[in-house]
Length: 105
Image 1 (spheres, rainbow, N blue to C red):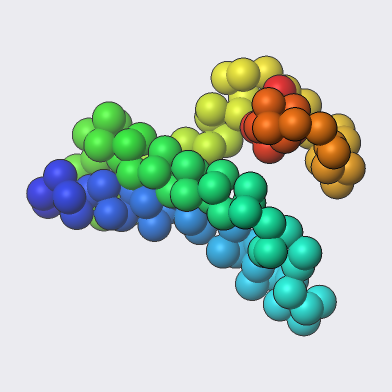
Image 2 (cartoon, rainbow, N blue to C red):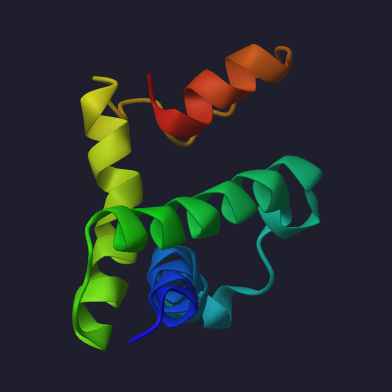
C-alpha cells in the first residue's frame, strides 16, 4: 500500500466514530451540532489525526490503517487526561474553553 492509501484509510477511520453516532441517531432528526462550524472544524481535525496516526503507526494492511484512524482520537483524549463527566453541557466560553471541552481536558 502507498502512503496516500494508508493516510486515506486512516482518515476514514478517524471519521467513523462520528458517522456511526449519526447513524445511531438517524431516527431522532438532525442534531443541532451539525450546524455549528466548531463541530466541522474538530471533525476535520479528527479525520486528519486518524490519517496521521495510520502513517505514523506504519500500518501494513487496510484494516490496520482504519483501526489506527479509529482509535487515535480516543488515545489523544486519554493522554491529555480529561474526564467526560459533563459531555452534554457545552460551554459558552471562548475558543480555548470550547477546545478543552471538545477534547475533554
